[in-house]
Length: 113
Length: 112
Image (cartoon, rainbow over all chains, first blue to last red; front, side, top):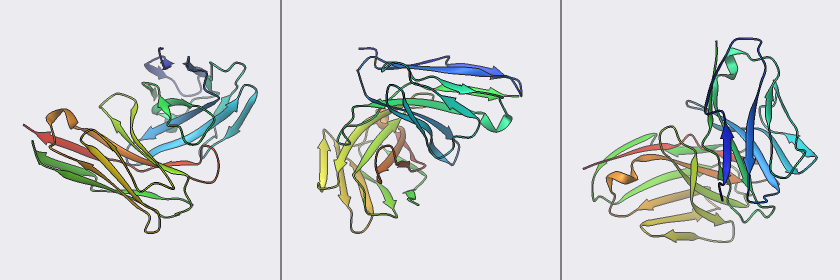
């Protein structure tokens, strides 16, 4: 199993540009999430999904959109990038039961100029 | 709102020393608590997961304890090695799916 994969690994955007961060998992996990990690702030939940077709907002959803058309994929869309969205983005997945741990992807480092 | 605090923010120890990392949380109504390891430029790797009904979990040289009533968890690392150098994060799950709150981590350096 490849686990959780994320692309790209690094991206530079100009303010106002849009882009999609890709996330895929091959473990047939129901639950998937997007976090951002900023210095001194820990990881903060952006959006999550409990299954195909079902998504919900996390702690910091503004400026981001998600969709979940398949179990495997959970892309994160930045509609109009802002410098405040400069961060490292992590995708995670886990089975439906709360007794299971989360598996994290390697992250996407985003710089918005 | 759940808040998770990790102290110290950074720790430097000589190789071979036993050490304890601390995690505290404000709301004791949790489902579980996890300890993760993060290497520079990498994602998070789960080390130990403690359910709310458990007191501790062990994996190799690692032992994590949980005291829900006091809102505390400790990660004990025995006989530390340079390869243990990383940032250690704790995270608590509460209030339904994905109400996961992370601490800001303890950056550990083990000096050979």
